[in-house]
Length: 273
Image 1 (cartoon, rainbow, N blue to C red):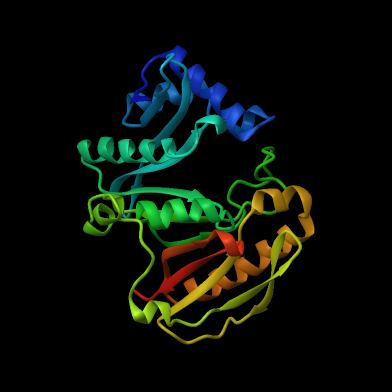
Image 2 (image 1 turned 120 degrees about the horizontal axis):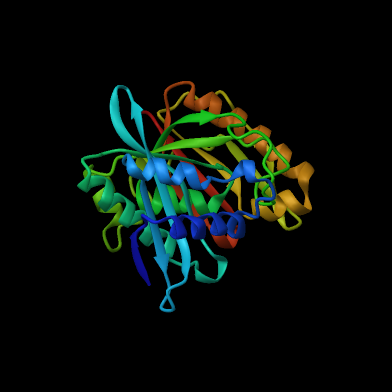
């Protein structure tokens, strides 16, 4: 697999085709268009394509220049890989994006993702080393993607501080580890889930824990839940919104995620700075 920068109109058209294939968009209003790619790449956007041995583009990553607190940064809008090529390529694209950003003088990349997507949470926090102190309600409005529609498009805005030692440790071989501090492992849980059919249901919510660390649990399989049990998916969206807004509103931020695949759940660790 080859990962390289994209600079030509034919390559941008291939990226547009991938947008539709990966996310299943049915409305062109949901995709990044050709003129946007042309203009932003000319002015500092990072657009990378991943190509198989036959020269076919099978994945890409796209970030644009932004400003946060008066300082330039990169906003990563999309990273996607065709289903048959998943299993590590997305991670390689993010590492390549980090290398390009550092070479251009940036030290921060931000992006959004659905906090109910447990595999993405594991990817972002455990493998890449992001942190998060911002919860945003219904960022993209109603989506035409089958992967997203059915509940408000609430998102976490994650910060990838690409020059920090914490990130370097996480992306090093063997760096994606569970939290080991005794204080973290002993932190109280703000909710509890129970098994009910193919997905776990939230059985208890506590918004009043006054501790420096707290765990918040989510189920796995949220995309399938959206399609097969939309009422439960909406219930989870509103409960998680209440939990994360409550604790992040008190100054805690998300610093890690533990995925427990066999139990059908994952857990966010929130901690005071």
